[in-house]
Image 1 (tube, rainbow, N blue to C red):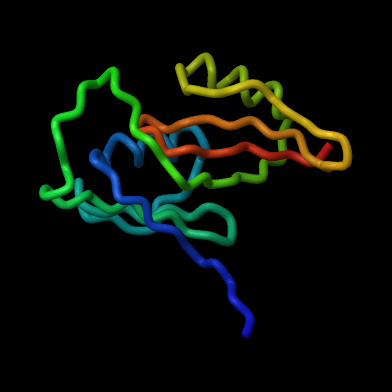
Image 2: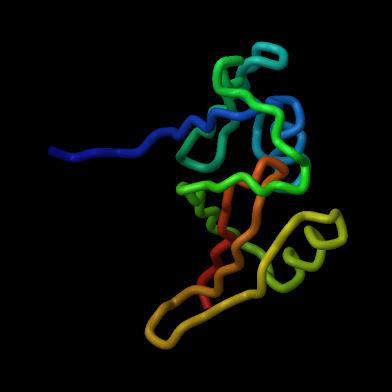
Length: 125
């Protein structure tokens, strides 16, 4: 059996906010949309769906409380990771330091979207 990951769906609190975040910061293409309920974004060979979380799962969380995520989306980039990191930091995007390891052919930088979903920028050394 051969599997090909064609998409991932994130259940989110604010579809519009995350749509703007991914389009404005990563230039993802908007493929389809149901206003404030559903967005489908094209990210290379994969699609990212942003689906409004059902009201039964929403809670009033203190803004200072950080959401936990067990998923990390990895974006391969084709530009200087140091420059891209600086550009995103200037837009107040939460990003860690750029890391690399012996025997690993990439430079990586982890970040978070406005709802705490983790992403990684990755570029070949």
